[in-house]
Amino acid sequence: MFIMPSELEGAARSRLLAALPAVLPPLCLCAAAGLATIGLAGCSTTFTPRDRAKIESLSPIPAPLPRPTNAFADNPQAAALGKELFFDAGLSADGKRSCATCHDPQKHFTDGKRFADGIGSGPGGTRNVPSIESVPWQTWFFWDGRADSAWAQAAGPIRNPIEMANTAAGVRERVISAHLAAWTPVFGEVPEDPDATLAMVGKAIEAFERTISPGPARFDQYVADIRSAGSSSVLTPQEAHGLEIFIDDGCTNCHSGPLFTDGSFHNIGVPQVAHGGLDPGRALGAIQVKQDPFNCVGVFADPGPTGPADCPELRFLDTSFPDWPLAFKTPSLRNVTKTAPYMHDGSFATLDAVLMFYSELPGIPLVGHRELTLQPLRLSGGDRADLIAFLGTLEGT
Image 1 (cartoon, rainbow, N blue to C red):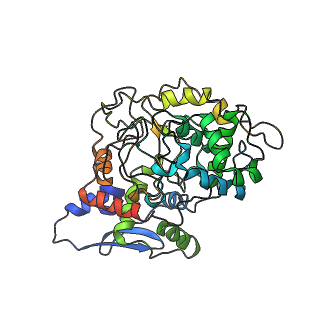
Image 2 (image 1 turned 90 degrees about the vertical axis):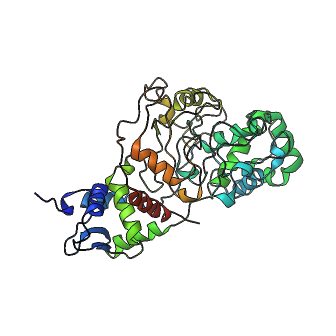
Image 3 (image 1 turned 135 degrees about the vertical axis):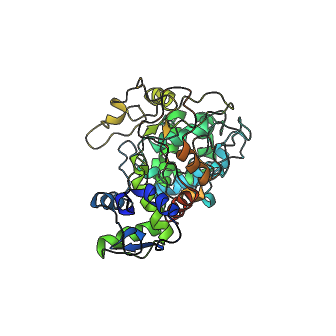
């Protein structure tokens, strides 16, 4: 019995079509009624209503999440101060590194290197620098989620001995010597407590980071078109097929929502490198965020109009959850084509290498088990190229 392509799903259908003899009618790949269509001349299939709902759930980018522990999160003066602080190398112990050293706006707020380059780490930290373009929509910060706010995260590298290697007292001195003109209208007098000053620095930096967004992409226009007009010609046939693979092969299990991330943590079995030893990931990060004096129940968190923040994410966080070892946060895929290398340890230099990993899922995790939803995708070279073409439609300014 011959199986028609319309009876198959996603990438499996494309691989069958690629293997068909040349004497059969030519393939067609187009956009009809706003949905990718693939099949033989004279027959075609389209995304199911469920798939279309998945596609529409990926756009547009929503309003930023509220930040109840930062009373200055949406204060324009705080954002202006935060910008000063973000680019100030004087906040580092050697006066040579600012937040922007690793989070370079010209590189979509990454540094393009495998590992972060800090004072105490030289050219080889232990983790890749993530972009901060999705900060306004995140719940947990750092690859291991050891901070529960962007202001707590911003304070981390400043005092980390292998990054900017400063102290809270050193930060207070720098604020007094270089930032009083912008500081006073926002916060008033500089606190005597250096930790309180460092927390305020973090809150100003968060206010600045909340002005940063991936920006609208062609994919957003595609989704807007199919919502309003029922069709779109924005995506090329190759990009449309890449979207089909993305939807049908389970990528949205983790890369969901308009930021293309579930914001959660997964052990996907990336081979652990010898440099820096075994990285425990969320297993340690969950403990650290509970103990962080800058967390949302700490003394430096701003209360809301009705009192301290409820902080359910932190309150119900189970530090002994058995799936936390070697689990790392799902990164956003917005502008992913511009932010190589990839994974928490920068172990893959190209997107094709990433897709080869997901295609084969080699090896087994050294601790725990691989994310249960993952199965080898068995992608052909053409499938990988089409997926990468689709990811290119997520590029925004």
